[in-house]
Amino acid sequence: MFKKTILAVTVLAGLSATVAQARDMPPPPPGPGFHGGWGTRHGLEVLAGLQLTPAQHKQIHAILAAARKDKRGDWKQEGALHEQIRDLLLAPGPVDRAKLTSLTQQIEALHQAAIDSRLDVAVKIHDILTPAQLADAKAREDKIRSLHEQLDELTAPPPPPAKGAPKEDGAE
Image (cartoon, rainbow, N blue to C red; front, side, top):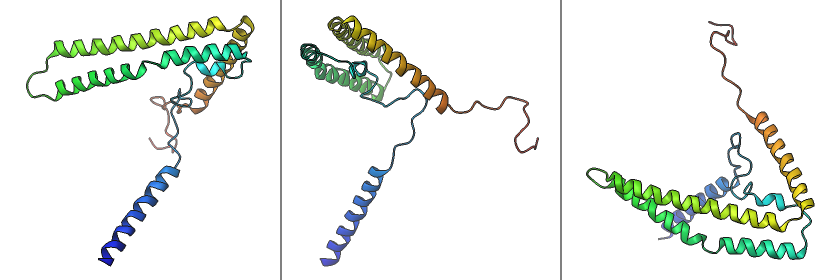
């Protein structure tokens, strides 16, 4: 009994050390065009640094809260549609292409509705900002875009060698 307990503790300690080590490892470097992943570059970062009045903060908060209100239902609906597609593709026999087309069209409609909703939010926020704030936001966005382009150039992989070019080691 005691040996089994020691073995179980040893195995658990080894697993927790492995998980801790994996958690401490940095993620692999992103490729060109990737600047921060989810949570950034979704349009709202241009509001950072703007001098908003308390009334503007309150209005923007209300707009964003209203926009988030029903998103969970859309995500669940899209997940259910993807599940139906998987079920169709994994079922024996021929695939019902008409049903597949209908499901993908429903997903595309959800995506278009999400795009329309984001644009509606952006227009509402635009209408709250003053011309000076819009000019400041535009200047910030231009600078951010320029910096991202520079970063892409610096992190881009080197171009492949041209055909017929001599090899580096001198061998043909």
